Amino acid sequence: MKLVTIDAREVAGRPGVLLDSGQVLDLSAAPGSLESSQWIPQSTISILAAGERGLEHALGLVALADAGRDKLKQIGALTSLSGTPLMTPVRRPGLILISHKMGNGVPASFIKSPNTAVGHAVKVSMHGQPALVANPMFAAVLGKPLYQGSEDTAEAAICAWTLITDLAPDIPEPETADDWRNYVAVRQFPGSLPMGPALITKDELAEPGELIAHARINGVESWSGIICPPASECVARLTELSQHYAFSPGDVIAFATAMDSVSSPRQVLKPKDLYSIAVGSVMELGFELSA
Image (cartoon, rainbow, N blue to C red):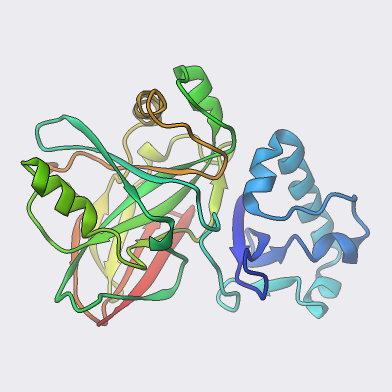
């Protein structure tokens, strides 16, 4: 299942499901119109945090939607993806953590502010930079608390995956402590973390490390390859991170491939470039850069 957050008058948005038809079902509107059960999900994370019950409830609403499409369209609860403005699928994550390996193979991680996150199909300001480097990757979204966990508990805490793109000025790989501080600081501007468009639940996507991604700049394919380590490595990294970080449901942990890889997905972008990263029929994240 693909969960989205619909941009609405509510500050937190409204939870929805991206259907195989390419339409978006508004879960907060569907229950009343379909006379469904009493529990109305308030966010994508409330669905994930409810575990199997939450997913079963959302799937039940999707099944009911098949029989009531005309009514749902009339009340605006079933819309096209292109006509539905989306927020980040996790509205203001408590923690966004990027995990990768330096050129020497040493694990490293850094935090990005929740204020950096923006949704699919938005315009991202470059804030005067002549160029930015885009580094796409898969991110795990947690549905359970995790602290000092084992690999089993870390794996169980991952409930969904999403796409992100880490944007930053093109600077050399850090070698000193000062370099590292600057490397992190230049990644904190608003809009530097496009995310989404959806959360794809783990039962539908178990191994993102096996999928081939395709990057396009202005509609022309510019790169293809793997943007995520194997799931087992992601779990191992998350387990190690949990020895120091206390994670909560809704936290987003992205896993980059090695920085010195010859197949690095890093792409240099200029003002007015349209960028997208697509992973088969799983999902596609796109945005436009503005000066």
